[in-house]
Image (tube, rainbow, N blue to C red; front, top):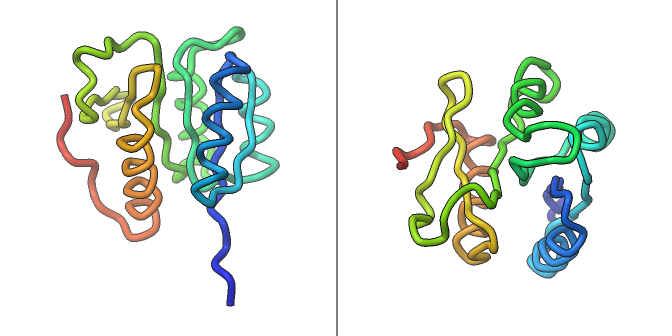
Length: 140
């Protein structure tokens, strides 16, 4: 029996970043699709119900944090794990333990350009945490 590929939605307004991230994730066995802005993200999430969302913070039509608030208000999408990717974090302080807090919930956050191996490890951990439960480890 073949293992079902996990689905990841990459939300980023940079086509270069989208393509690069998609290629790396597909090479690691994920089914990957992308959204350019908040509206497209909400549509894709409803249509595909991903196992995880990589969410850029600064989007052309909205803020990634606001999109996360909307997703968490909907029972159908509330449990989808989200990892932020952003230019708003400095690479110098990004040690892989950065978090953003939204409505008292912590989400991992990574500076761009992405340290892919750390990100991949976090993706696996977040998908497993969503399946098996557990709290996000403390972060900065």
